[in-house]
Image 1 (cartoon, one colour):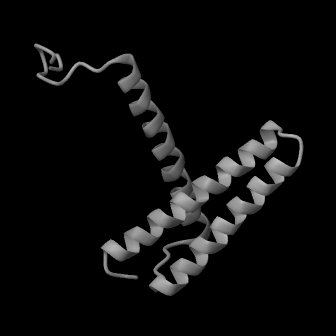
Image 2 (cartoon, rainbow, N blue to C red):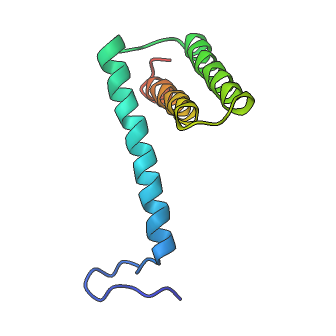
Length: 106
């Protein structure tokens, strides 16, 4: 049985659980920051679902290209960062697509 805090009643987390939550928070922050960047660059985007799929697939292709560059050349931090950046863009586009879907625009 998990211990709970006498003050808050919340479960007391292990170091591993705290690290997992921190990693998720940092990852979600990167995606949110990319969504803000996209909104600043493109403005409000309200595409139909097929167009969102095209945009998402284009971004996914960019991930594949960056990963191919990473694996076929000597690995560098710059190449690793390029893959990470493209993955964040895929996640941000998927989030924008979901926003449109949930709010009835896609």
